[in-house]
Amino acid sequence: MVVPESYSLHIDCGGKQVTVDGNETYDDDSDNAGPARFHLSGKNWGFSSTGHFMDNDRAEYYIWLNQSKLFMSDAELYMDARVSPISLTYYGFCLGNGNYTVNLHFAEVMFTEDQTYNSLGRRIFDVYIQVNYLKLL
Image (cartoon, rainbow, N blue to C red; front, side, top):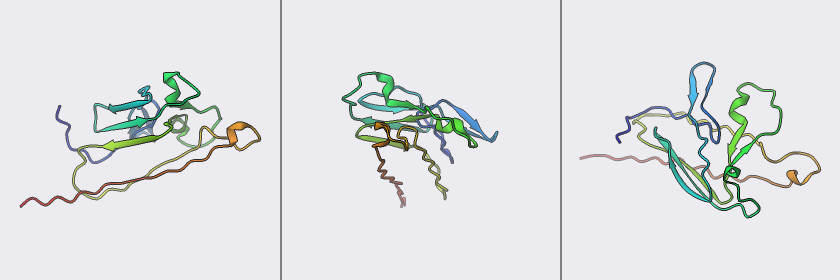
């Protein structure tokens, strides 16, 4: 399969396809994944996920559903989230040469700010953006 060159990438990580502001369509990312998975979207991106949640054997546990009510614009982008206990990596393929603006949107949908066990977690993110300059002679 040959993937055409593209100049944008929008993924609703863990969620269904959604169009925001009538012009940006975020791709569906509702694959169940599991403890070890490499998934190609069929478009210009994919993800890999590793790790097993020892306290839960449900396949759908790798997508977390937000239980909160969100009062914000584009809330549908933050209703589902892909989770992984060890590593979660997204890959963009066949992006055309040029300059890009990179926007990453994060929202906490799992941990709460109250006195329950759900408030005990924290997140650490490592974000890598690979730049490859290839000069053909």
